[in-house]
Length: 256
Image (cartoon, rainbow, N blue to C red):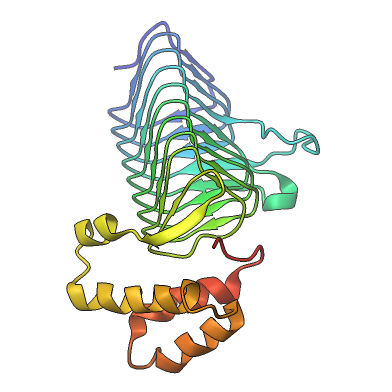
């Protein structure tokens, strides 16, 4: 299942039932979990650890040096979980020392063609990045988020769970969970209703989230005033707690 035309460093650790296509390069200090399929002409540099049952398509570049002027060949890492799909020409960089030395990818994520994940990013589970979307360094994407084609995410931004970033949108501040962001100026335009319904959120929970959204974005309150109002109802409506946590932990401010 490993092509004789693949180039594999003798220090690489390849588990059982791994398929590697011709022309693919596997560098030193790379670990690949069982059942992973790697197409032709991919490049995987180390130190990189890849889990089980991933699909890595041709011409992807994983685990190479971060695109950061301050990087000085330190031994940073890339960790990729299980069941991810990484399509053609996708690039995922290792971390930097100043950013914690690790780029972390979770499970069951879908990276479409030409997507880019910068150094020190953390992507949780079930995230979709549509073709040509890009994450700058140190971005944190929570589970079930969708990032549209050609969207660009600024350094140190946090993208909340179940949020939807529209195509060609530039995001410079944190995106709260459950929201839909659209337009070049990244306008918040409501809840990600389709995503919430597909994920199984019931009507009562969605109604609470809708009320919380109006409190934050439609009542004319400051962020701190909205936060205080949400804190007053969190005991009765725990659905608002992710909003509260995201606002309290934000370092860049929230996208409005």
